[in-house]
Length: 334
Image (cartoon, rainbow, N blue to C red; front, side, top):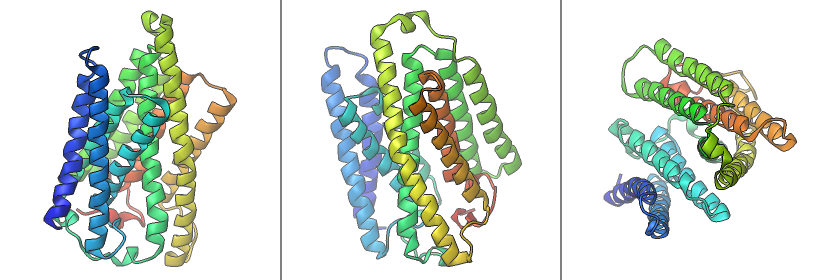
């Protein structure tokens, strides 16, 4: 990996961290809030541009499409998260989502930087990935994952603005527990059965408890017209993100089936990662149906979007880091 590419990637990573802190600091002073928010957005855009050039440079150096291992997919995920937020922030004029989007991008940058050096180097493709289907199948999936993350983060903000602090705390704790399981599975030798139990158990228990406590609202926030308008806006933002991610996930699943038939002679083999992608697709299909039909309150839909975030995390990283196995196990590096 060239020094130029390293410099660009580091610039993007540092920009995401700086943007996060500037977004957080913007809440400290009403006088300088607008200036701070503008500065945070500019820093994030600089990082997005640097990462775009870094990905292109990596492709030129590798003489292939730059999406072939976990490290490269993390770069794409961070790129899509930053770009997705820039898009919705321009569409809605939102800013609070910025610190969560920046934090998510920074977290995945750090996660990628801790991977073994062999993941960072430009290397030949493994035989399973030598196909033109790779650049057709994988990018839509990665971008859909990023949009689903933004939808889940918007759900957290919707819970906050609507005064559902108990459900919010439970949702955040659930995400942290699931993320810890992914981190432990990636960087330690912890028994994968315990990690699977941590991820799945915390996701089920946390989501159920968050759902059951959804009616416990803070009276002050519930009575605030401004807060309720913000809650409605974040509900709309989450729906827009899902509306972008869902067709991309659909394309990814269809092209994955076509690639599977080309490589393995079967369109669908009920591989664990294939099955989990289908579960994730069904969860967002249900979310869209419930949102359009207005069968659930915005607060309950926010819990559904957080559940979708957890399913997305399991689909994206869980099956390699938590030892579920399957035909997609070539993504493992340990």
